[in-house]
Image: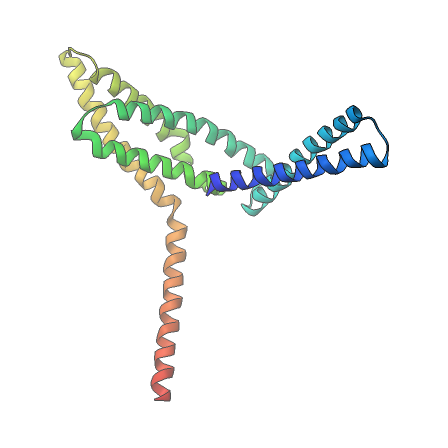
Length: 216
Protein backbone atom coordinates (compact mmCIF):
# COMPACT_ATOMS: atom_id res chain seq x y z
CA UNK A 1 0.00 0.00 0.00
CA UNK A 2 2.81 2.39 0.83
CA UNK A 3 4.47 1.75 -2.55
CA UNK A 4 1.12 2.37 -4.25
CA UNK A 5 0.69 5.66 -2.35
CA UNK A 6 4.21 6.75 -3.35
CA UNK A 7 3.58 5.88 -7.01
CA UNK A 8 0.19 7.63 -7.10
CA UNK A 9 1.65 10.73 -5.44
CA UNK A 10 4.53 10.80 -7.94
CA UNK A 11 2.09 10.55 -10.85
CA UNK A 12 -0.08 13.37 -9.45
CA UNK A 13 3.01 15.53 -8.89
CA UNK A 14 4.30 14.82 -12.40
CA UNK A 15 0.97 15.50 -14.14
CA UNK A 16 0.38 18.68 -12.10
CA UNK A 17 3.87 20.07 -12.73
CA UNK A 18 3.76 19.19 -16.45
CA UNK A 19 0.36 20.88 -16.83
CA UNK A 20 1.64 23.96 -15.01
CA UNK A 21 4.77 24.07 -17.20
CA UNK A 22 2.70 24.03 -20.40
CA UNK A 23 0.32 26.70 -19.09
CA UNK A 24 3.13 29.03 -17.94
CA UNK A 25 5.07 28.55 -21.18
CA UNK A 26 2.05 29.40 -23.31
CA UNK A 27 1.18 32.37 -21.11
CA UNK A 28 4.75 33.72 -21.19
CA UNK A 29 5.41 33.10 -24.88
CA UNK A 30 2.02 33.97 -26.40
CA UNK A 31 0.29 36.35 -23.99
CA UNK A 32 3.28 38.14 -22.45
CA UNK A 33 5.44 37.84 -25.63
CA UNK A 34 8.55 36.62 -23.80
CA UNK A 35 11.39 34.92 -25.68
CA UNK A 36 11.36 31.14 -26.19
CA UNK A 37 14.28 30.68 -23.76
CA UNK A 38 12.83 32.91 -21.02
CA UNK A 39 9.40 31.28 -21.37
CA UNK A 40 11.06 27.88 -20.96
CA UNK A 41 12.90 29.03 -17.82
CA UNK A 42 9.65 30.32 -16.29
CA UNK A 43 7.93 27.03 -17.20
CA UNK A 44 10.68 24.92 -15.59
CA UNK A 45 10.65 26.97 -12.39
CA UNK A 46 6.87 26.85 -12.08
CA UNK A 47 6.86 23.10 -12.81
CA UNK A 48 9.45 22.44 -10.12
CA UNK A 49 7.60 24.56 -7.55
CA UNK A 50 4.32 22.81 -8.39
CA UNK A 51 5.95 19.38 -7.99
CA UNK A 52 7.30 20.30 -4.54
CA UNK A 53 4.08 22.02 -3.43
CA UNK A 54 1.84 19.07 -4.34
CA UNK A 55 4.22 16.70 -2.52
CA UNK A 56 4.31 18.94 0.54
CA UNK A 57 0.53 19.27 0.74
CA UNK A 58 0.09 15.51 0.36
CA UNK A 59 2.64 14.77 3.11
CA UNK A 60 0.99 17.26 5.49
CA UNK A 61 -2.38 15.59 4.93
CA UNK A 62 -0.83 12.16 5.51
CA UNK A 63 0.81 13.33 8.76
CA UNK A 64 -2.42 14.96 9.97
CA UNK A 65 -4.42 11.84 9.10
CA UNK A 66 -2.08 9.78 11.30
CA UNK A 67 -2.48 12.16 14.24
CA UNK A 68 1.18 13.22 14.29
CA UNK A 69 3.02 16.52 14.29
CA UNK A 70 5.48 17.27 11.49
CA UNK A 71 8.35 16.91 13.97
CA UNK A 72 7.11 13.50 15.12
CA UNK A 73 6.72 12.29 11.54
CA UNK A 74 10.26 13.39 10.63
CA UNK A 75 11.60 11.60 13.72
CA UNK A 76 9.75 8.38 12.84
CA UNK A 77 10.80 8.68 9.19
CA UNK A 78 14.45 8.95 10.29
CA UNK A 79 14.12 5.82 12.44
CA UNK A 80 12.43 3.93 9.61
CA UNK A 81 15.24 4.85 7.23
CA UNK A 82 17.80 3.48 9.70
CA UNK A 83 15.65 0.40 10.31
CA UNK A 84 15.46 -0.34 6.57
CA UNK A 85 19.26 -0.50 6.34
CA UNK A 86 19.42 -2.78 9.39
CA UNK A 87 16.74 -5.09 7.98
CA UNK A 88 18.73 -5.44 4.74
CA UNK A 89 21.79 -6.43 6.79
CA UNK A 90 19.70 -8.90 8.79
CA UNK A 91 18.31 -10.49 5.61
CA UNK A 92 21.78 -10.88 4.11
CA UNK A 93 23.10 -12.53 7.27
CA UNK A 94 20.16 -14.91 7.74
CA UNK A 95 19.97 -15.90 4.06
CA UNK A 96 23.67 -16.71 4.03
CA UNK A 97 23.33 -19.10 6.98
CA UNK A 98 22.76 -22.21 4.88
CA UNK A 99 21.25 -24.47 7.51
CA UNK A 100 18.03 -26.42 6.94
CA UNK A 101 17.69 -26.63 10.71
CA UNK A 102 17.34 -22.84 10.98
CA UNK A 103 15.68 -22.09 7.63
CA UNK A 104 12.13 -21.99 9.00
CA UNK A 105 13.06 -19.75 11.93
CA UNK A 106 15.09 -17.39 9.76
CA UNK A 107 12.30 -17.01 7.18
CA UNK A 108 9.79 -16.43 9.97
CA UNK A 109 12.06 -13.84 11.57
CA UNK A 110 12.54 -11.93 8.31
CA UNK A 111 8.80 -11.92 7.63
CA UNK A 112 7.96 -10.66 11.12
CA UNK A 113 10.58 -7.92 11.04
CA UNK A 114 9.49 -6.77 7.58
CA UNK A 115 5.84 -6.79 8.67
CA UNK A 116 6.57 -4.53 11.64
CA UNK A 117 8.47 -2.19 9.32
CA UNK A 118 5.77 -2.13 6.60
CA UNK A 119 2.97 -1.59 9.16
CA UNK A 120 4.85 1.38 10.60
CA UNK A 121 5.66 2.75 7.16
CA UNK A 122 1.97 2.59 6.25
CA UNK A 123 0.77 3.99 9.60
CA UNK A 124 3.63 5.91 11.30
CA UNK A 125 1.76 6.26 14.61
CA UNK A 126 2.26 2.49 15.12
CA UNK A 127 5.95 3.30 15.75
CA UNK A 128 5.17 4.13 19.37
CA UNK A 129 3.78 0.62 19.92
CA UNK A 130 7.01 -0.97 18.71
CA UNK A 131 9.68 1.35 20.12
CA UNK A 132 11.40 -1.56 21.86
CA UNK A 133 11.77 -3.29 18.50
CA UNK A 134 13.25 -0.25 16.73
CA UNK A 135 15.50 0.86 19.62
CA UNK A 136 16.75 -2.49 20.95
CA UNK A 137 15.69 -5.79 19.43
CA UNK A 138 16.40 -4.98 15.78
CA UNK A 139 19.96 -3.93 16.64
CA UNK A 140 20.49 -7.11 18.68
CA UNK A 141 19.09 -9.27 15.87
CA UNK A 142 21.42 -7.73 13.29
CA UNK A 143 24.54 -8.02 15.47
CA UNK A 144 23.84 -11.62 16.50
CA UNK A 145 22.82 -12.75 13.00
CA UNK A 146 26.02 -11.31 11.52
CA UNK A 147 28.08 -12.86 14.31
CA UNK A 148 26.40 -16.23 13.78
CA UNK A 149 26.99 -16.07 10.01
CA UNK A 150 30.66 -15.19 10.52
CA UNK A 151 31.32 -18.02 12.98
CA UNK A 152 29.30 -20.64 11.10
CA UNK A 153 31.11 -19.85 7.83
CA UNK A 154 34.53 -20.70 9.28
CA UNK A 155 35.97 -23.99 7.92
CA UNK A 156 37.45 -24.99 11.30
CA UNK A 157 35.83 -24.28 14.66
CA UNK A 158 37.32 -24.35 18.13
CA UNK A 159 35.36 -25.49 21.22
CA UNK A 160 34.89 -21.85 22.19
CA UNK A 161 33.46 -21.04 18.75
CA UNK A 162 31.02 -23.96 18.96
CA UNK A 163 29.85 -22.85 22.41
CA UNK A 164 29.47 -19.29 21.13
CA UNK A 165 27.42 -20.54 18.15
CA UNK A 166 25.05 -22.45 20.45
CA UNK A 167 24.63 -19.42 22.73
CA UNK A 168 24.03 -17.10 19.78
CA UNK A 169 21.53 -19.52 18.27
CA UNK A 170 19.64 -19.77 21.55
CA UNK A 171 19.54 -15.99 21.92
CA UNK A 172 18.28 -15.61 18.34
CA UNK A 173 15.43 -18.00 19.17
CA UNK A 174 14.50 -15.88 22.19
CA UNK A 175 14.68 -12.67 20.18
CA UNK A 176 12.52 -14.21 17.49
CA UNK A 177 9.79 -14.81 20.08
CA UNK A 178 10.20 -11.26 21.43
CA UNK A 179 9.85 -9.77 17.95
CA UNK A 180 6.66 -11.78 17.35
CA UNK A 181 5.30 -10.30 20.60
CA UNK A 182 6.21 -6.82 19.30
CA UNK A 183 4.04 -7.51 16.24
CA UNK A 184 1.18 -8.81 18.41
CA UNK A 185 1.30 -5.66 20.56
CA UNK A 186 1.34 -3.48 17.44
CA UNK A 187 -1.82 -5.21 16.17
CA UNK A 188 -3.57 -5.47 19.53
CA UNK A 189 -5.92 -2.53 18.89
CA UNK A 190 -6.87 -4.00 15.50
CA UNK A 191 -7.78 -7.30 17.15
CA UNK A 192 -9.87 -5.51 19.80
CA UNK A 193 -11.66 -3.53 17.08
CA UNK A 194 -12.32 -6.72 15.13
CA UNK A 195 -13.82 -8.41 18.22
CA UNK A 196 -16.03 -5.39 18.82
CA UNK A 197 -17.23 -5.37 15.21
CA UNK A 198 -17.90 -9.11 15.37
CA UNK A 199 -19.99 -8.65 18.52
CA UNK A 200 -21.98 -5.87 16.87
CA UNK A 201 -22.54 -8.02 13.78
CA UNK A 202 -23.62 -11.04 15.87
CA UNK A 203 -26.06 -8.90 17.89
CA UNK A 204 -27.48 -7.47 14.68
CA UNK A 205 -27.96 -10.97 13.23
CA UNK A 206 -29.63 -12.19 16.43
CA UNK A 207 -32.04 -9.22 16.40
CA UNK A 208 -32.93 -9.95 12.77
CA UNK A 209 -33.60 -13.61 13.61
CA UNK A 210 -35.90 -12.63 16.49
CA UNK A 211 -37.72 -10.15 14.26
CA UNK A 212 -38.19 -12.74 11.54
CA UNK A 213 -39.53 -15.29 14.03
CA UNK A 214 -42.02 -12.67 15.23
CA UNK A 215 -43.24 -12.06 11.70
CA UNK A 216 -43.77 -15.71 10.86
